[in-house]
Length: 305
Image (cartoon, rainbow, N blue to C red; front, side, top):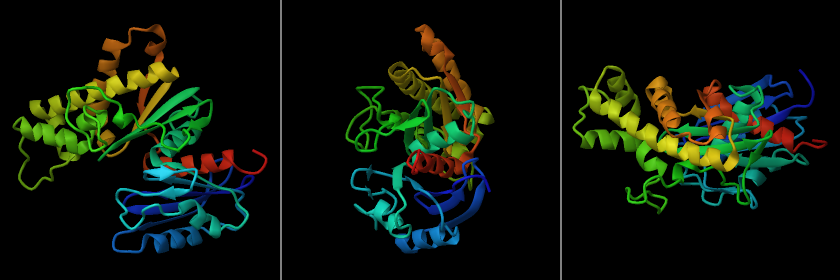
């Protein structure tokens, strides 16, 4: 074991995970449990206890949102039992005297990639995005996450890319998410005549398989999503002078079926010289990115940090 240890907690829509991680990124203990049919607070308690967190110097939490960092509360869309749930205090009660800090799951994904993943060569300005049922994001600037006053910075999925586009559940229209989330891509493809092979689920995985097999409508769905994502990425890059974009999430598992058209769209639009250095890469940490990000977040708030 190397140096002081921290507790990392990852609150997802279907499972909770926790780990004790040292300053070199070594996972000393880890636990994970699905929350289907169980009391989420009880699951949280069990996964934390299973890591034996005695002696940790800080705790970091990456959570599905919305969240309110100032109050330490969360209201995850996929966990109806938690509305304004005091997540930070609940974790803190199990770790008396230990600082507890939380951020969005996509923000922790970005920080995890900066610390231990693709961008561990320490990109000065990194955007991590999660392309899945929704689209989330997080920005890391000079090694620190940019969380914003409420903790909700980085929502690239809700950048408007078409003012005359479809309504988005967030209340705006033409958001990146209405083009590039998994359900949005499948819905558009179905409207263009794409049909599933018998027995296949109507999801982004099936759409990606069809695109790789040469289905023109499926390919067009990925190209359309890539155009919207590229617009959002360039907007964010222009604001933050980004070096790197790391892409994770279920839809991103399509690999170059999604990443290649994003890169082409960026090359076609990066008119300003400083934007041409922007690199787009897949996540190398996968589902562990959030845990490593939560650990890095905790380290930033540990005593003496």
